[in-house]
Length: 113
Ligand SMILES: [Zn+2]
Image (cartoon, rainbow, N blue to C red; front, side, top):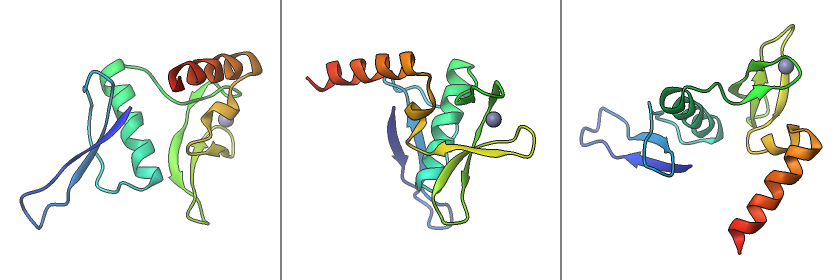
């Protein structure tokens, strides 16, 4: 996914940021391009364009939400039960089961070549 910005012509309206798929489709936008905002934009695009809930807490089988933690770090938050941090935004690969994580790493290595 790529982060895109639609600059605003009106100084009263902030610039809008979208997370676009490789085919340039995107859905919804955020005004704050910090980690939680970007994560939220990516989630909106996956939901709005691909109709998929992402990311998911594998333990509770439910969608999680980007959330700015108390120490300003953005985390994916699972609301199941009393709620818990799934991982920091950007660290989702770590939450995958070993086999999927290794497959993802292989794919990334191929892309880097
Ligand atoms: Zn959970």
